[in-house]
Amino acid sequence: MSLKSNLHNLKEKYKGTKMAPAFNALHTFLYLPNETTHNGTHIKAADDLKRTMNTVIMAMVPCLIFGMFNAGYQHFLASGAPVEFLSWDAFYIGLIKILPLIVVSYGVGLGIEFIFATINNHEVEEGYLVTGMLVPLIVPIDIPLWMLAVAVVFGVVIGKEVFGGTGMNILNPALTIRAFLFFAYPTWMSGDKVWVHGAVERTNEIAAGANVDAISGETILGSLAQGHEIHHSIADMFFGFIPGSVGETSTFLILLGGLFLIFTKIGSWRIMLSAVIGALVMGLIFNGVVSSGWITETSKFYTLMSTEFWHHLIIGGFAFGVVFMATDPVTASQTNKGKWIYGFLIGFLSIMIRVFNPAYPEGVMLAILLMNVFAPTIDHYIIQGNVKKRMKRLKVKTA
Image 1: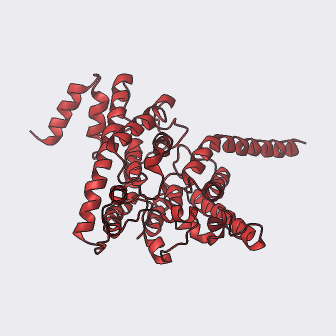
Image 2: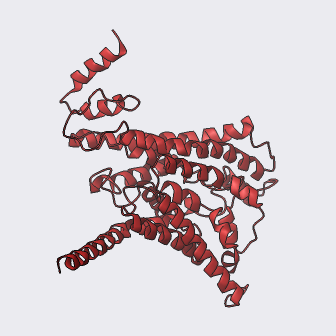
Image 3: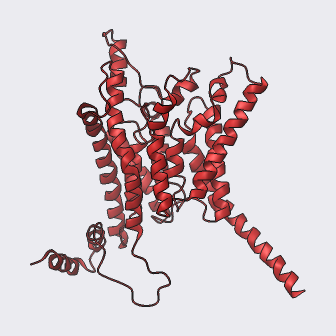
Protein backbone atom coordinates (compact mmCIF):
# COMPACT_ATOMS: atom_id res chain seq x y z
CA MET A 1 0.00 0.00 0.00
CA SER A 2 1.38 3.44 -0.92
CA LEU A 3 2.21 6.19 1.53
CA LYS A 4 -0.55 8.31 0.00
CA SER A 5 -3.10 5.56 0.64
CA ASN A 6 -1.93 5.14 4.24
CA LEU A 7 -2.23 8.86 4.89
CA HIS A 8 -5.70 8.90 3.33
CA ASN A 9 -6.80 6.00 5.56
CA LEU A 10 -5.41 7.71 8.66
CA LYS A 11 -7.15 10.93 7.71
CA GLU A 12 -10.46 9.12 7.39
CA LYS A 13 -9.79 7.39 10.72
CA TYR A 14 -9.26 10.65 12.62
CA LYS A 15 -11.86 12.66 10.68
CA GLY A 16 -14.39 14.19 13.05
CA THR A 17 -12.47 13.15 16.18
CA LYS A 18 -10.63 15.26 18.75
CA MET A 19 -7.33 14.17 17.22
CA ALA A 20 -8.18 15.45 13.73
CA PRO A 21 -6.53 18.89 14.21
CA ALA A 22 -3.32 17.28 15.47
CA PHE A 23 -3.19 14.82 12.56
CA ASN A 24 -3.92 17.51 9.98
CA ALA A 25 -1.12 19.69 11.39
CA LEU A 26 1.42 16.86 11.05
CA HIS A 27 0.02 15.79 7.69
CA THR A 28 0.33 19.23 6.11
CA PHE A 29 3.66 20.21 7.66
CA LEU A 30 5.62 19.26 4.54
CA TYR A 31 2.77 18.29 2.21
CA LEU A 32 0.00 20.36 0.71
CA PRO A 33 -3.51 19.13 1.56
CA ASN A 34 -5.25 17.40 -1.33
CA GLU A 35 -8.22 19.71 -0.99
CA THR A 36 -8.72 22.68 -3.31
CA THR A 37 -11.38 25.35 -3.64
CA HIS A 38 -13.31 25.46 -6.91
CA ASN A 39 -15.55 28.51 -6.57
CA GLY A 40 -16.39 31.44 -4.36
CA THR A 41 -12.80 32.52 -3.71
CA HIS A 42 -11.37 35.98 -4.23
CA ILE A 43 -7.66 35.09 -4.14
CA LYS A 44 -6.02 31.82 -5.20
CA ALA A 45 -2.38 31.14 -4.32
CA ALA A 46 -0.06 28.21 -3.76
CA ASP A 47 1.21 29.44 -0.39
CA ASP A 48 -0.44 29.27 3.02
CA LEU A 49 0.40 30.29 6.59
CA LYS A 50 2.64 27.26 7.11
CA ARG A 51 4.68 28.04 3.97
CA THR A 52 4.95 31.67 5.02
CA MET A 53 6.25 30.67 8.45
CA ASN A 54 8.74 28.23 6.90
CA THR A 55 10.04 31.03 4.65
CA VAL A 56 10.78 33.18 7.70
CA ILE A 57 12.54 30.24 9.34
CA MET A 58 14.73 29.83 6.24
CA ALA A 59 15.72 33.49 6.57
CA MET A 60 16.87 32.80 10.15
CA VAL A 61 18.78 29.56 9.49
CA PRO A 62 22.05 31.32 8.48
CA CYS A 63 21.93 33.30 11.75
CA LEU A 64 21.37 30.06 13.65
CA ILE A 65 24.27 28.20 12.05
CA PHE A 66 26.60 31.19 12.43
CA GLY A 67 25.46 31.52 16.06
CA MET A 68 26.46 27.93 16.77
CA PHE A 69 29.99 28.55 15.51
CA ASN A 70 30.18 31.87 17.35
CA ALA A 71 28.93 30.39 20.63
CA GLY A 72 31.80 27.91 20.68
CA TYR A 73 34.26 30.51 19.43
CA GLN A 74 33.37 32.95 22.23
CA HIS A 75 33.53 30.12 24.78
CA PHE A 76 37.11 29.27 23.86
CA LEU A 77 38.11 32.95 23.74
CA ALA A 78 36.73 33.44 27.25
CA SER A 79 38.60 30.39 28.54
CA GLY A 80 41.90 31.65 27.13
CA ALA A 81 42.13 28.88 24.51
CA PRO A 82 41.10 30.47 21.20
CA VAL A 83 40.37 28.21 18.25
CA GLU A 84 39.56 28.77 14.61
CA PHE A 85 36.05 30.13 14.10
CA LEU A 86 35.12 27.58 11.44
CA SER A 87 36.17 24.52 13.41
CA TRP A 88 34.41 21.42 14.67
CA ASP A 89 35.35 22.27 18.28
CA ALA A 90 33.60 25.64 18.07
CA PHE A 91 30.55 24.23 16.26
CA TYR A 92 30.22 21.31 18.70
CA ILE A 93 30.01 23.59 21.73
CA GLY A 94 27.37 25.70 20.02
CA LEU A 95 25.43 22.65 18.87
CA ILE A 96 25.18 20.97 22.28
CA LYS A 97 24.13 24.24 23.92
CA ILE A 98 21.70 25.60 21.32
CA LEU A 99 20.01 22.40 20.12
CA PRO A 100 18.40 21.72 23.55
CA LEU A 101 17.04 25.29 23.55
CA ILE A 102 15.41 24.65 20.17
CA VAL A 103 13.97 21.30 21.31
CA VAL A 104 12.47 22.79 24.47
CA SER A 105 11.13 25.82 22.64
CA TYR A 106 9.38 23.80 19.95
CA GLY A 107 8.43 20.89 22.19
CA VAL A 108 6.70 22.99 24.84
CA GLY A 109 5.27 25.62 22.49
CA LEU A 110 3.86 23.25 19.89
CA GLY A 111 2.66 20.93 22.65
CA ILE A 112 0.53 23.74 24.05
CA GLU A 113 -0.71 24.61 20.55
CA PHE A 114 -1.80 20.99 20.00
CA ILE A 115 -3.52 20.85 23.41
CA PHE A 116 -5.52 24.03 22.77
CA ALA A 117 -6.42 22.88 19.24
CA THR A 118 -7.61 19.51 20.53
CA ILE A 119 -9.64 21.00 23.37
CA ASN A 120 -11.22 23.74 21.26
CA ASN A 121 -11.61 21.46 18.22
CA HIS A 122 -9.96 23.79 15.71
CA GLU A 123 -7.01 23.41 13.38
CA VAL A 124 -3.50 23.81 14.79
CA GLU A 125 -2.25 27.31 14.04
CA GLU A 126 1.22 27.52 12.56
CA GLY A 127 2.23 30.85 14.06
CA TYR A 128 4.50 29.22 16.62
CA LEU A 129 6.75 27.80 13.91
CA VAL A 130 8.55 31.15 13.73
CA THR A 131 8.28 31.92 17.44
CA GLY A 132 9.84 28.56 18.28
CA MET A 133 12.91 29.46 16.22
CA LEU A 134 13.10 33.07 17.42
CA VAL A 135 13.18 32.22 21.12
CA PRO A 136 16.48 30.23 21.15
CA LEU A 137 18.11 33.02 19.13
CA ILE A 138 17.31 35.79 21.64
CA VAL A 139 18.00 34.18 25.03
CA PRO A 140 21.31 33.63 26.87
CA ILE A 141 23.00 30.44 25.77
CA ASP A 142 23.35 29.04 29.31
CA ILE A 143 19.79 29.75 30.46
CA PRO A 144 18.37 26.75 32.39
CA LEU A 145 15.97 24.76 30.24
CA TRP A 146 13.25 24.74 32.90
CA MET A 147 13.23 28.55 32.90
CA LEU A 148 12.84 28.57 29.14
CA ALA A 149 9.99 26.04 29.37
CA VAL A 150 8.14 28.15 31.96
CA ALA A 151 8.59 31.29 29.84
CA VAL A 152 7.32 29.54 26.70
CA VAL A 153 4.21 28.38 28.55
CA PHE A 154 3.58 31.95 29.71
CA GLY A 155 4.24 33.45 26.28
CA VAL A 156 2.01 31.04 24.37
CA VAL A 157 -0.87 30.87 26.85
CA ILE A 158 -0.97 34.44 28.18
CA GLY A 159 0.58 36.19 25.18
CA LYS A 160 -1.41 34.45 22.46
CA GLU A 161 -4.00 31.79 23.31
CA VAL A 162 -6.03 33.96 25.70
CA PHE A 163 -6.48 36.46 22.86
CA GLY A 164 -7.76 33.77 20.50
CA GLY A 165 -4.56 32.29 19.05
CA THR A 166 -2.48 33.16 16.01
CA GLY A 167 -3.66 36.31 14.28
CA MET A 168 -5.41 37.65 17.37
CA ASN A 169 -2.46 38.31 19.69
CA ILE A 170 -1.61 41.91 20.60
CA LEU A 171 2.05 41.37 21.52
CA ASN A 172 4.80 39.54 19.67
CA PRO A 173 4.91 36.08 21.34
CA ALA A 174 8.71 35.69 21.17
CA LEU A 175 9.26 39.07 22.81
CA THR A 176 6.57 38.27 25.38
CA ILE A 177 8.59 35.17 26.30
CA ARG A 178 11.80 37.20 26.52
CA ALA A 179 10.11 39.92 28.58
CA PHE A 180 8.83 37.28 31.02
CA LEU A 181 12.35 35.90 31.39
CA PHE A 182 13.80 39.38 31.88
CA PHE A 183 11.40 40.35 34.67
CA ALA A 184 11.04 36.92 36.30
CA TYR A 185 14.71 35.88 36.18
CA PRO A 186 16.68 39.13 35.74
CA THR A 187 20.04 37.71 36.84
CA TRP A 188 19.88 35.20 33.99
CA MET A 189 18.96 37.81 31.39
CA SER A 190 21.31 40.69 32.21
CA GLY A 191 24.87 41.05 33.34
CA ASP A 192 28.26 40.75 31.73
CA LYS A 193 28.66 36.95 31.89
CA VAL A 194 25.38 35.42 30.74
CA TRP A 195 26.06 35.69 27.01
CA VAL A 196 29.08 33.35 26.84
CA HIS A 197 28.88 29.65 27.66
CA GLY A 198 30.78 28.83 30.85
CA ALA A 199 31.62 32.43 31.81
CA VAL A 200 29.49 32.28 34.97
CA GLU A 201 31.18 29.07 36.13
CA ARG A 202 34.63 30.53 35.52
CA THR A 203 33.67 33.63 37.50
CA ASN A 204 32.68 31.40 40.42
CA GLU A 205 35.97 29.51 40.14
CA ILE A 206 37.93 32.75 40.41
CA ALA A 207 35.86 33.78 43.42
CA ALA A 208 36.80 30.44 45.01
CA GLY A 209 40.50 31.09 44.41
CA ALA A 210 41.05 28.92 41.36
CA ASN A 211 43.65 29.89 38.77
CA VAL A 212 41.69 30.64 35.59
CA ASP A 213 43.42 32.24 32.61
CA ALA A 214 40.68 34.57 31.48
CA ILE A 215 36.99 35.32 31.67
CA SER A 216 35.00 37.54 29.39
CA GLY A 217 31.36 37.51 28.57
CA GLU A 218 29.97 40.99 28.37
CA THR A 219 28.38 42.29 25.22
CA ILE A 220 29.38 45.54 23.56
CA LEU A 221 26.27 47.25 24.91
CA GLY A 222 27.00 46.03 28.42
CA SER A 223 30.54 47.35 28.15
CA LEU A 224 29.37 50.75 26.87
CA ALA A 225 26.73 50.99 29.60
CA GLN A 226 29.50 50.58 32.17
CA GLY A 227 31.49 53.40 30.61
CA HIS A 228 34.07 51.23 28.84
CA GLU A 229 35.29 51.68 25.29
CA ILE A 230 34.60 49.30 22.42
CA HIS A 231 37.49 46.88 21.85
CA HIS A 232 36.03 45.21 18.77
CA SER A 233 36.59 46.31 15.20
CA ILE A 234 33.77 47.50 12.96
CA ALA A 235 34.23 44.37 10.86
CA ASP A 236 33.86 42.10 13.89
CA MET A 237 30.69 43.92 14.95
CA PHE A 238 29.22 43.82 11.45
CA PHE A 239 30.00 40.19 10.66
CA GLY A 240 29.26 38.99 14.20
CA PHE A 241 32.46 37.81 15.88
CA ILE A 242 31.32 39.24 19.23
CA PRO A 243 29.48 37.98 22.33
CA GLY A 244 25.70 38.28 22.41
CA SER A 245 22.48 36.37 21.86
CA VAL A 246 22.83 33.52 19.39
CA GLY A 247 21.01 35.21 16.53
CA GLU A 248 21.78 38.87 17.07
CA THR A 249 25.53 39.18 16.55
CA SER A 250 25.87 38.99 12.74
CA THR A 251 24.34 42.13 11.26
CA PHE A 252 25.52 40.95 7.84
CA LEU A 253 23.46 37.74 7.95
CA ILE A 254 20.50 39.57 9.47
CA LEU A 255 20.67 42.03 6.56
CA LEU A 256 20.64 39.15 4.08
CA GLY A 257 17.68 37.63 5.90
CA GLY A 258 15.87 40.96 5.76
CA LEU A 259 16.46 41.25 2.01
CA PHE A 260 15.13 37.71 1.58
CA LEU A 261 11.96 38.58 3.51
CA ILE A 262 11.49 41.72 1.42
CA PHE A 263 12.05 39.76 -1.81
CA THR A 264 9.44 37.18 -0.77
CA LYS A 265 7.09 40.03 0.27
CA ILE A 266 6.77 38.67 3.80
CA GLY A 267 8.67 41.38 5.67
CA SER A 268 7.74 45.06 5.32
CA TRP A 269 10.57 47.15 3.92
CA ARG A 270 8.76 50.25 5.17
CA ILE A 271 9.05 49.11 8.79
CA MET A 272 12.69 48.08 8.41
CA LEU A 273 13.76 51.30 6.68
CA SER A 274 11.80 53.62 8.96
CA ALA A 275 13.18 51.87 12.06
CA VAL A 276 16.73 52.43 10.80
CA ILE A 277 15.92 56.09 10.13
CA GLY A 278 14.43 56.46 13.62
CA ALA A 279 17.53 54.94 15.22
CA LEU A 280 19.86 57.17 13.22
CA VAL A 281 17.86 60.28 14.14
CA MET A 282 17.98 59.43 17.84
CA GLY A 283 21.70 58.63 17.59
CA LEU A 284 22.38 61.94 15.86
CA ILE A 285 20.46 63.81 18.55
CA PHE A 286 22.58 62.20 21.27
CA ASN A 287 25.80 62.91 19.38
CA GLY A 288 24.68 66.53 19.03
CA VAL A 289 23.99 66.78 22.77
CA VAL A 290 27.50 65.47 23.50
CA SER A 291 29.08 67.85 20.97
CA SER A 292 27.26 70.80 22.54
CA GLY A 293 28.88 70.09 25.90
CA TRP A 294 25.60 69.61 27.76
CA ILE A 295 26.75 66.16 28.91
CA THR A 296 30.13 65.77 30.60
CA GLU A 297 32.37 62.72 30.57
CA THR A 298 31.46 62.05 34.19
CA SER A 299 27.84 61.36 33.27
CA LYS A 300 26.77 57.72 33.28
CA PHE A 301 25.07 58.35 29.92
CA TYR A 302 28.15 59.83 28.26
CA THR A 303 29.66 56.68 26.69
CA LEU A 304 26.48 55.49 25.00
CA MET A 305 25.54 59.04 23.99
CA SER A 306 28.92 59.66 22.42
CA THR A 307 28.87 56.37 20.48
CA GLU A 308 28.85 57.05 16.74
CA PHE A 309 25.20 57.26 15.74
CA TRP A 310 25.47 54.57 13.05
CA HIS A 311 27.25 52.15 15.39
CA HIS A 312 23.91 51.58 17.11
CA LEU A 313 22.76 49.70 14.02
CA ILE A 314 25.44 47.00 14.29
CA ILE A 315 25.63 46.45 18.05
CA GLY A 316 23.12 44.73 20.27
CA GLY A 317 19.91 43.16 19.05
CA PHE A 318 18.59 46.17 17.14
CA ALA A 319 19.00 44.71 13.65
CA PHE A 320 17.59 41.30 14.60
CA GLY A 321 14.59 42.82 16.35
CA VAL A 322 13.77 45.16 13.48
CA VAL A 323 14.04 42.51 10.76
CA PHE A 324 12.44 39.48 12.40
CA MET A 325 10.14 40.83 15.14
CA ALA A 326 9.10 44.40 14.37
CA THR A 327 7.84 43.17 10.97
CA ASP A 328 5.49 40.58 12.51
CA PRO A 329 2.37 41.11 10.35
CA VAL A 330 -0.01 40.38 13.23
CA THR A 331 1.31 42.86 15.79
CA ALA A 332 2.65 45.57 13.46
CA SER A 333 0.72 48.39 11.83
CA GLN A 334 -1.33 47.32 8.82
CA THR A 335 -1.54 50.59 6.86
CA ASN A 336 1.37 51.77 4.72
CA LYS A 337 1.57 55.18 6.37
CA GLY A 338 1.16 53.53 9.76
CA LYS A 339 4.14 51.26 9.04
CA TRP A 340 6.37 54.31 8.53
CA ILE A 341 5.28 55.80 11.86
CA TYR A 342 5.40 52.44 13.67
CA GLY A 343 8.91 51.59 12.44
CA PHE A 344 10.30 55.07 13.03
CA LEU A 345 9.13 55.09 16.65
CA ILE A 346 10.60 51.63 17.25
CA GLY A 347 14.02 52.77 16.08
CA PHE A 348 13.77 56.09 17.91
CA LEU A 349 12.67 54.53 21.20
CA SER A 350 15.15 51.65 20.97
CA ILE A 351 18.15 53.99 21.08
CA MET A 352 16.51 56.20 23.70
CA ILE A 353 15.95 53.25 26.05
CA ARG A 354 19.42 51.92 25.26
CA VAL A 355 21.04 55.17 26.40
CA PHE A 356 18.84 56.19 29.32
CA ASN A 357 18.59 52.77 30.97
CA PRO A 358 22.16 51.59 31.67
CA ALA A 359 20.80 48.70 33.74
CA TYR A 360 19.17 47.36 30.58
CA PRO A 361 20.98 48.85 27.58
CA GLU A 362 19.19 46.66 25.01
CA GLY A 363 16.02 48.65 24.33
CA VAL A 364 14.67 47.09 21.14
CA MET A 365 12.56 44.51 23.01
CA LEU A 366 10.73 47.11 25.07
CA ALA A 367 10.38 49.46 22.09
CA ILE A 368 8.74 46.79 19.91
CA LEU A 369 6.40 45.63 22.69
CA LEU A 370 5.38 49.23 23.37
CA MET A 371 4.66 49.90 19.71
CA ASN A 372 2.77 46.59 19.42
CA VAL A 373 0.29 48.10 21.87
CA PHE A 374 0.03 51.38 19.95
CA ALA A 375 -0.07 49.87 16.42
CA PRO A 376 -3.91 49.61 16.34
CA THR A 377 -4.17 53.23 17.52
CA ILE A 378 -1.81 54.40 14.76
CA ASP A 379 -3.84 52.54 12.13
CA HIS A 380 -7.10 53.90 13.55
CA TYR A 381 -6.05 57.52 13.13
CA ILE A 382 -4.55 56.85 9.69
CA ILE A 383 -7.83 55.31 8.52
CA GLN A 384 -9.93 58.05 10.10
CA GLY A 385 -7.73 60.65 8.41
CA ASN A 386 -8.28 58.95 5.04
CA VAL A 387 -12.03 58.82 5.63
CA LYS A 388 -12.15 62.55 6.39
CA LYS A 389 -10.16 63.37 3.26
CA ARG A 390 -12.52 61.34 1.10
CA MET A 391 -15.56 62.92 2.73
CA LYS A 392 -14.17 66.37 1.94
CA ARG A 393 -13.58 65.40 -1.70
CA LEU A 394 -17.12 64.01 -1.88
CA LYS A 395 -18.59 67.28 -0.55
CA VAL A 396 -16.58 69.29 -3.09
CA LYS A 397 -17.84 67.12 -5.97
CA THR A 398 -21.47 67.30 -4.88
CA ALA A 399 -21.36 71.05 -4.16
